Length: 119
Image (cartoon, rainbow, N blue to C red; front, side, top):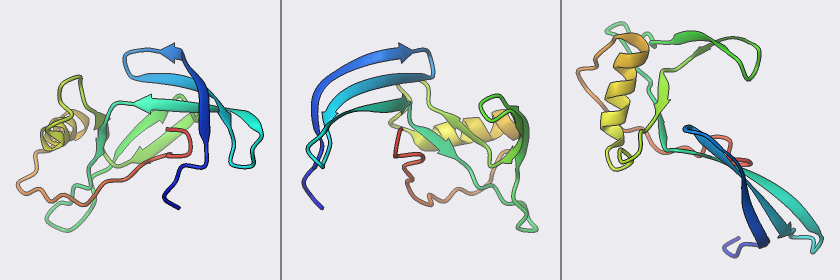
């Protein structure tokens, strides 16, 4: 489907901090009925699949407030304002910040819209 079936009738930012903003849109849904859609905006971010010489993945573990549990994850992090043009530099910085590891070789694996139902 190439044409957007949603119509936005109004939009307002309902929350903003240094990491995210939340927008609430009044919409006409594809079924023609009015509704509200919440959109979370997060600055561009990276996830890094770092492999050691034995092809073992480097993971980080931390308590995640949002899900109230400890989580093992790929190293990841967000860009700072003005960094969006060089996501490789963001990835290199985040890998060192999160793990203390520096990678010798880098390969771009693709782009993912993570949580694109709301973000």
